[in-house]
Image (cartoon, rainbow, N blue to C red; front, side, top):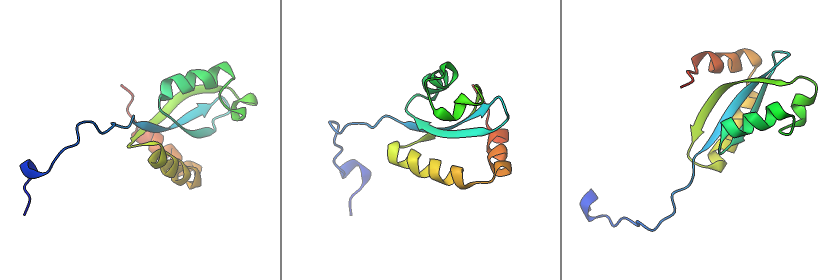
Length: 100
């Protein structure tokens, strides 16, 4: 039986950059869900009008939720799950979020 000290560790293996799923509140109160490896930078893009067509009708007002994911595929899976939620459930996510 192997112990942890006997298991070889590949120190040359690339460490994947974390990805995030995030929610942005629009001026009309709606919530936009997306993914990014840098949600603060992506939010700035949304505010500048260059992020997503979603914000053409109602500007991005606040980054209200972020959740760290292991990699891009996990972030995409989580985004799909969040997009299926009712708005009330998304608001619960926002309510549990504490920004730093």
